[in-house]
Image (cartoon, rainbow, N blue to C red):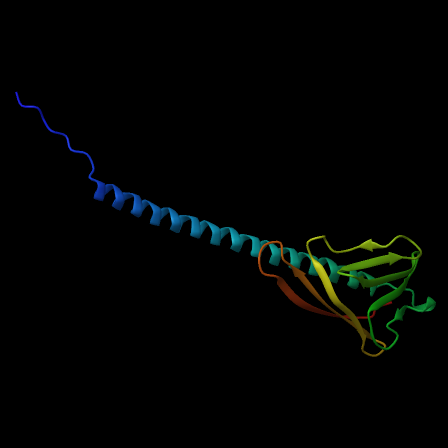
Length: 162
């Protein structure tokens, strides 16, 4: 009876298989890194959009139902200002302004409340009074939880309704 010879891998075959495995694994890791980076940037874009919606709603609330008899919108009275100040019935003076990288709302003599989340920065918050009937708010929001900064400019014009 003759014994059957079994043959293993040669050194060349082993090197080729390990090299092929390294190329496939490297490509998989690069693709996974790209997917994770894209997901983080998408999360930043969503955070900026959500903060813009919230801040726009607060500005809309301020500029609707104010107390015209007590002065209404006191700042900006004309032109441009970095502060929006409105007299609201039952509340008194409500003030919205930028402090550092935050949008801050203060009711009457109460404590200031930061409107934006900690991951989103508010810059260049400006209010423009275009005649007696409208106020335009302009602001830039940015976020950079992962990699490049996601930055977007916003503008909202609100017609004044006492």
